[in-house]
Length: 49
Image 1 (cartoon, one colour):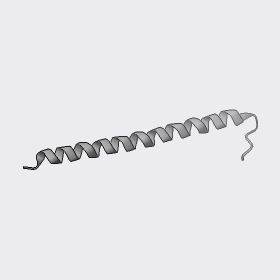
Image 2: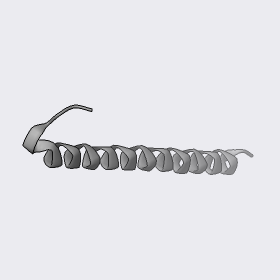
Image 3: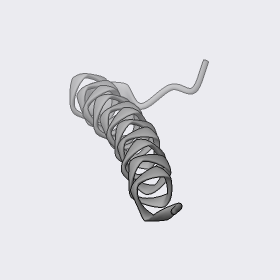
Image 4: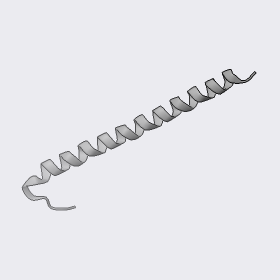
């Protein structure tokens, strides 16, 4: 692994926080997409005569 010297705790903590944020954004986006698809399917079902 890379040698960050005395900054290792700061760098690894920053990487960890970034990984958690990116993972959360991906999960949130997938949840919103599935919710939007469900709502669209319901709206299309209601519009059919």
